[in-house]
Length: 495
View 1 (cartoon, one colour):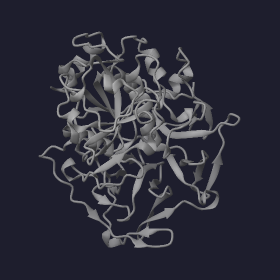
View 2 (cartoon, helix red, strand yellow):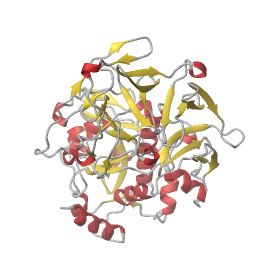
View 3 (spheres, rainbow, N blue to C red):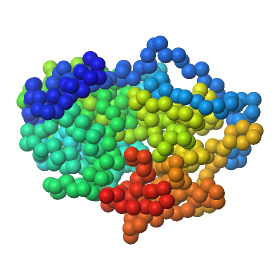
View 4 (spheres, helix red, strand yellow):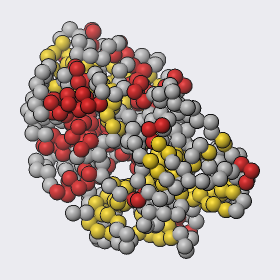
């Protein structure tokens, strides 16, 4: 089915299409003909006709503060036109997870893996809002936690199921996963700092914060292997599953749960999140929204056998992946207004100097690797004249163009000594901004060669996030306020 047909079906469904609705513990099934149109991992594959990239890798010369490539290894930095549609596979780059990404057939999954270091404590739903919990509390909080490099425990790091549920009508019979995902792709999601569970009305401030966190993509996991790969990439997989008495019971179970063994199969569907896997157990670790008294502190192992088929005749009827966090390949251009990042699948041509952070965590200009061979990067950004990269060591590096070749400078001196950078943002009209793990924001003065501490224009405002949204640098605070930076380097509270 082509994209137009998919959109027609989606619009019809979200406008009230009611076929195959099953209400239960808060989840309704997507019509099968629409669910099957959701892209899978296989849809990421590059066309067989695409020419493979023959990459030239330069060997760096190690120095104390820079790594230099010799002139003989350089290519002329001529104007480049790059078609994003010809980009390689999309793969995510979660912090502290460092596989050498490539086609799925080349990914070596470990026997055991989980996302517990980036998961919030399981919450406890009080309404039929399990889909909102699985997407906001589990998927969103986990992925933004990876971007911020910390486990979400504070309200400013926990995303709000209430923000979703209250705006989708508060349907007592529950929600469709596709309905919720469409909502967060268009509207985003606010945190508990703005929209607590006790609030019933969504305000303008809540919507402004949510706008910074729109979902970027929606895919479906079609197999056990898909679910494992998504988890390994850092994505909780939202599952729509059938109910059973043993599953519903709080009692801890010794063996992985198997729906086939249920004596008391119940009517209705429920949303949970798969957040780990263990081949020795032959089971997935799932996170629920029934409080920490459920099973093992809100978690439970469920057998792989439950996923032999993923359809409306099986225990797992749907498996959704909501992509919120940044993912590779990332493209930036020094001549692109706003330092805009281009995503695979959105056709865009850049002229001038365009850089790409590849799925292998190397940095490319055109077809040439410009980063040192052994260095690992998690993000790139640039302003009008400079490319900056965030290393795995949480240090910012700047690419220098010099007569004898390229060099990289560590920007970790002065007041930034011993500080760990978690996020950064660059704009064509301003200097580089970074956020540290101590919730301090700094701006790099290129001409002076120093870092300056940034204070937001509100007393005790503590920044917890910095990113580019709609071409503007936005800083979000611990209470959910969003400040934007203008071309005069002045901050203002977003309206």
